Image (cartoon, rainbow, N blue to C red; front, side, top):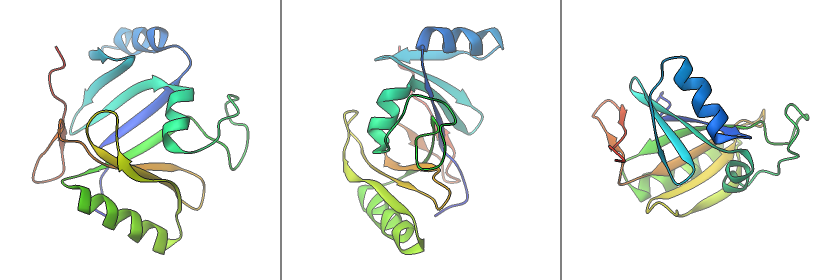
Length: 147
């Protein structure tokens, strides 16, 4: 696994409120299908409904922030790769290292391929290949123009 993060996704209660907050801080996002994408240097930050993010991660969500170990904390870190085969290999490496696979790799609704795991402290990682996101040679991620 390369030492980098491609995307941080925040599970939010209200997409409009969250987007307005970040835009008031000077960020500029693009919204598509109830998801807001922000380019953040060489990576991206995404706002998505908390319940949808938990379900997509394969981790139960009580809906209560900071509800304790074992539940969903509302944040998913993503590591994007260049192929489906790399996704499968990295998930296998994570499991061998002690991760809990919470969602085996599968085709995604956005045309990619991804799976999720939790590290020993319960932090969720999505390991993904997304044909619509460009990865530079150094692993930097560039969002497309959704307009």
